[in-house]
Structures are given as structure tokens and as C-alpha cells.
Length: 154
Image (cartoon, rainbow, N blue to C red):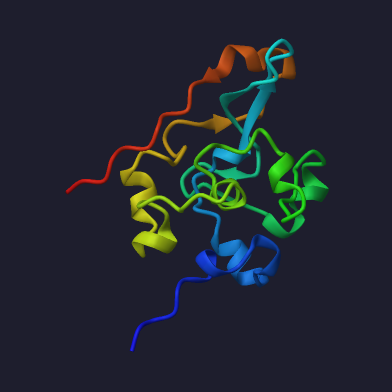
């Protein structure tokens, strides 16, 4: 007997349960980095300055249930807004699935382990630092080109 296909291959984002939706987050922390939008190109530029609520070791929010009260510009991802958030990293599972693409080899739902996010070089752990003490005007001094995912080791 064959196993059923994983939920992310059979359900749309809107059809997923809350637990399924939350499990799509790979814990990379990239969406929690401060970003600047280039006014000429509309392209988003990432900085190494992370939201003050991001645990820089685990790359998880330290107060996820209350994040929007503590950080008013924190955006809650929904099936309705994912496609319009141009700042979501190219590696983001929500973005990939919304665009009809597959989850990569390193995603914990595919690999079965969180360690592959680090193995692939996707996590911001060890690279990002807190935004505390950095003004909006200073963010340009903290620009960072996000690294591409490493290939799977054979």
C-alpha cells in the first residue's frame, strides 16, 4: 500500500490546517530581517539587522503569539497575502508553494530534520544581529546579500 502524498503537495495554502500552515515555516529567520525597498527598482534589500523579537540562536520569534502587539509592522502571513509580499525570501516555503513550486531538499518537512536548514546555509543564525540601537536611517549600513542554498551533499 502506498503512503498518501504529503499535505503540501495535495492542499492549497488556504486548505491547510493551522498546524500544517505553521509547519511550513522552516525557521530560517530570513523574513524577520529588516528590509529596504529600492525606490528605483522595487527590489527588496535585506539587512543583517533582525527584529528585536528574533532569537538569534534558534531563529524563532521569542513572543510569537504577541508579536504584532510588540512589533506593529510585523506582518502575519495568510494564504491571501503571501502572493503580494514581494519581500518574502525566494527560499520561503509559503512563497514557493504559492508560486506552484516544490519545497527544497533542506526543508524540514522534506528532510525530516531542522538541521538541514543550517546545512544548506539558509538560516540567519550566526549572521544576523538585533536591530536594537540601529536607526532606520542606519539600516543601509547593514545591507546583506542573502546566500543561496547549498546543494545537497551526495
